[in-house]
Length: 372
Figure 1 (cartoon, rainbow, N blue to C red):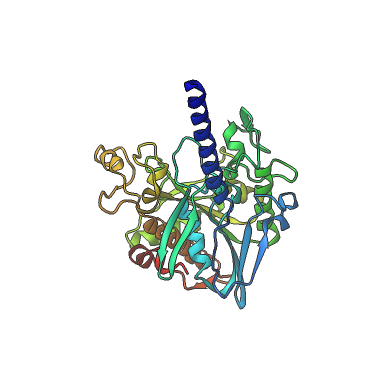
Figure 2 (figure 1 turned 135 degrees about the horizontal axis):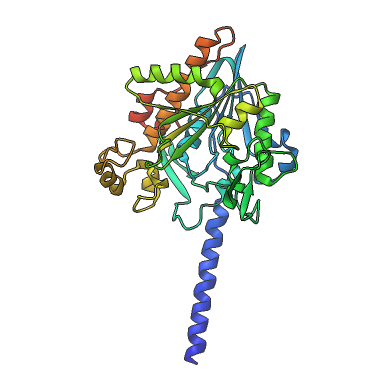
């Protein structure tokens, strides 16, 4: 009898745990709510450019803002890696604030929409983070680095990148930023990548941005990565940023590392591509307690110790941390300066945008001031 009671009790615990997990998992399929600025022209689906992903978890929204006068066409992606929230939130801030006077801005806040429906196993990541705005709380999903296994499975032992044949870990087969230029009728993630490349071609995008984050110990943090044909724009922007005491490391895209946006967009289309990285402690191997607060304030005592050893490329502030406000401010400032540098080289076809929050305003007033 005691064994039967114990078995029944364990079974009940298992069922209860399964129900709770199912409810939590289901909530990650509820879409994030955005409030685009009134100057929004239209919303399209990525499946317009890659029909194979229609009605799937990859069919993300694309937001178009058209100016009154013709000019350059700009594309900005957030959420390529949904566990890198500053890229995602930078796109949301622009979506809810910008006004385009000349040219066109195309925003994709959740490029890897599928990855927002799950988290990475064994990482202990929070599923959501909350920002308190003037009119109430807004919840945003904290997702996975890669597409959900419910959309693409199983992973191969070795991923062979198309068309280069470069070999990578099988896990990377679901990494959007290893699947460019993508292919029609390929894997789920290849079809998402294909759609973005077709968007660049069909909309004749002139300059494009892919916003990311990385662990503090990764050398590429706080960098602007550029294709060789974008070098002059990148260096001019970084030079101007230095005058404002903001350091962005220039990183030229390696020609032998295939599948990344800054390489494949540049090689396969006419666009001038850039990728930017901010420093995010929740992605680091040295981090301690992993929770929503680490997403928002980027404050980790473990990184303070690492900073004291001199092993980090960044100056880690034990008081300020690497706050989400600051990381978004860096992305949007870098975006604005790269556009200014582009306009200086192409004065006959500029992009002119108003209502882009400044670095200082975002850092000090916080995202809550610029989210509706």
